[in-house]
Image 1: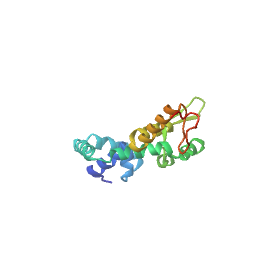
Image 2: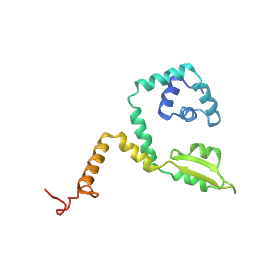
Image 3: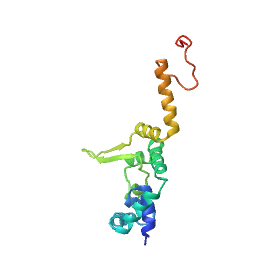
Image 4: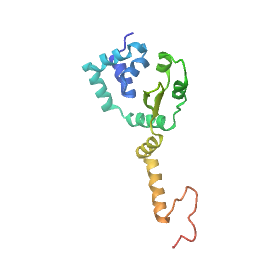
Length: 163
């Protein structure tokens, strides 16, 4: 299977993972690491990636999409892998492990899996989204003025209104 340098660069900009890029473009799983090394060592591919990064106004969109996947994505496939007694390498390669931060074997033969922090992903989404940032700032202002948490749609107490 031949992957064009341009196709590799375009997909790599979205995934930032060379092996995943190769697989998404049709490479076999057992060839993905070799293809990743080959393309990421290529000066042409490096130039293409740099050019796409410069021109790509969608990068923020990709970041938000990734953060949304971390914040709201399922961990069901990862959990199935942990509890499956007879898992194959192919099942692992096909599983959606986007939310998995770390996998390691522990003493005694068990497996420990850590996931990315959903709360941090949500906080970053708020930081990146101007509309959410404004709502958050307005909420903080109301909380400071009234000295407590005011939820959306709730009117402040008459007693605390000193106007």
